[in-house]
Amino acid sequence: MSTKIHALVEGLGSLARFRLTGGEAGDSPQALSLLLDLQPDSLSADKAYDTDAILEHLASAGIEAVIPPRCHRLVQRTFDHHLYKNRNLVERFFCRIKQFRRIATRYDKLAERFASFVALTASVIWLT
Image 1: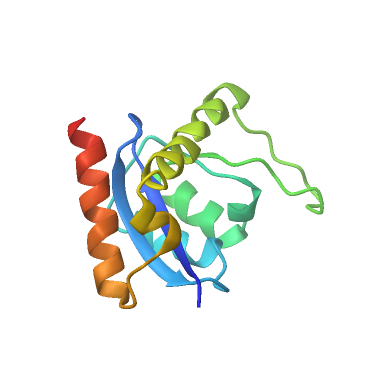
Image 2: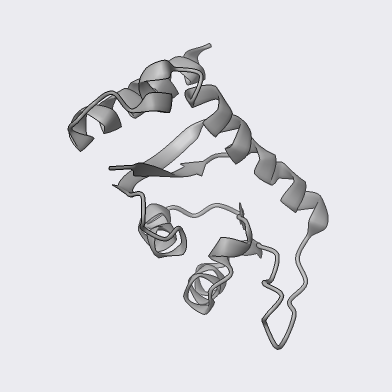
């Protein structure tokens, strides 16, 4: 059994919100639930999040979508390449939490315990 951590990371690289799903779950269906009642100025994400539902939600909420378009889109959108460089904050966050063996190897059998340790680890990273 594998587990995916879907995370929303704020501008300084700290965890804002996360959700655990099974390893086979897609990334984009989790995005809207993570964004619920948050109003960032912009959202940087990779091509997996280039869906019409996410883009429509961001546009209606007044959030700038910094998501590169997939190559199969008929109409290619433009996005801010300069802002997209900040997406590495998410990658660096995952690199930092995976330094904790308990998260990297997922020793916990229960999702609640694993989620608690992810939150604890994010808090420790935020404090240091």
